[in-house]
Length: 280
Ligand SMILES: [Zn+2]
Ligand SMILES: [Zn+2]
Image (tube, rainbow, N blue to C red):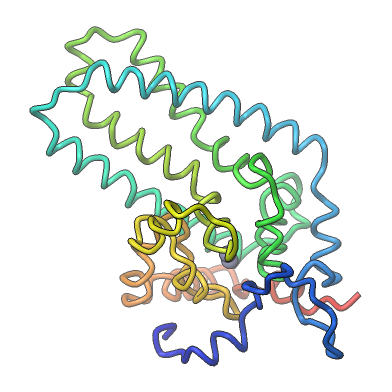
């Protein structure tokens, strides 16, 4: 379905995110439909609290320490003759990270509301804000952009570090391929929102990042733009985007939505639509 949209439709219905003034050029007579001046976007942005900021900072520090430790261990136990299986396991880790990025993004975009205790304001809010002010992510610093994703990987990286310090070298050899899978999965899950942010950044990106986007090793700009066409119902994967086309082709998200709507009676994207309509 998304594939049939014309480029003109995409540009008309999606955000003017390549506006050099970050959607803040109000000089034209018509009031812009989207951006930081949108009443809903303003209200959503105001819910980013200092407690949440502290939680994000701590998680980032712990996570980066664990990543560095596990990386050193993986290098120390590396056996070059196994490079082929290590590569396959690592690629599979990246693919699974892309799938989870889609699943979580789809879940938060499609269901629930920011009124849900604890997770509403902390985890659903940024998804609502992102649809009505897509460039706000480009104004978030490293901590606000990546805090949640890094936090998710902490238990898995901690468990891996524990294994490296407690298991014998022979036992580590046996589980090495699995650890490569988990490590790449954790790295790509952690960096998902950074890749997502870069896919919204039209100016000033270093050449090596645009190269990775052009090679479709990380989420490309044009590719992600398909998701930003209202009502935001497809192309949810935002790590590499590799799974977006196949999942759309088999109607994966529509199928899940039909099942949930039939069993719970909830309508997909009800809350997201409510925020998009907010005028003041
Ligand atoms: Zn979305
Ligand atoms: Zn986006």
